[in-house]
Length: 273
Image (cartoon, rainbow, N blue to C red; front, side):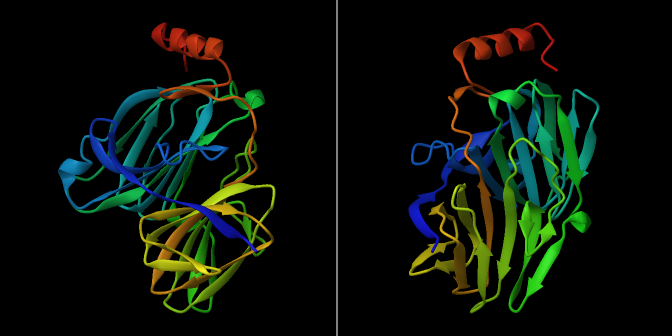
C-alpha cells in the first residue's frame, strides 16, 4: 500500500512584492520532488499580507499553477492572456520559451487563500509556446462519495477527467474533502512521484497521519487508503518524474548553465516572450 516516506512542514517566506506565504516544496527540507519544483501556500485575513501581489516577472522552462481556495487574483501576461481566478478556480500557465506575467489581488479586504505549484518541463518542451488555462470553479468536476467529495483539477479519478489539458507532464491533481470518520481510496501509479498536503484537519494514511500544515512525500503502491480523523481537506498531486538535470536561476528553470545565461540574455534584451 502507498505510504509516507517523509513529512515536511512549510517555512515562513515572502515572494512577489512581499506576499507572506509558507514554502513547502523549495525549502531546505524538500528542495524538489521531480517534476515538482515548488509548492507555496498563501493565506491571510490581513490585506497587508497579500495586497502587494506578484507584479510583472518572467518565467521560462516550466509551468505555474495557481489554485484559489478563497479570494480573487487577477492575471495578465505578455502574450495577451488575462483573467481573474476566484474561489475554487484554477490557473495553469505554460511558461515554455518565455512569458512575463503578473498576479495581483482583486480585493482590498477579506481572506485570500490558495496554492502555487511549479511543475517542471522536460527538455523537449522547455522552449514550447507559452499557454494559459483559466478554469473557473464551475468547470472543475467533482466526485461525491459517502462522507465527502473529490475535486478533479487534473488527471483522472473514478473515470472522471479534470479540465487541465497540459500534455508535457500529465499530473494528477485532486482536492480532497472528507468529513470526520470518512474513508477514501485512490488508485495510484507506482512510477509516479507525489505528495499529500493537508490544509485542514488530520488524515490517516495506513498507520501514519498528517495534520494541518504537513506534507507527506509518498511511495506509491497500488491503492492509497485515507481516513479522516476530523473534518479534513488536502491536495493530492502526483506525476511521472522527468529525470533530467535541473539548473535553476530564480524564475528560469533549464537543463544547463548555458541555457540559463541565454534566458537572462533574452530577458534583458526584451525577447523573452
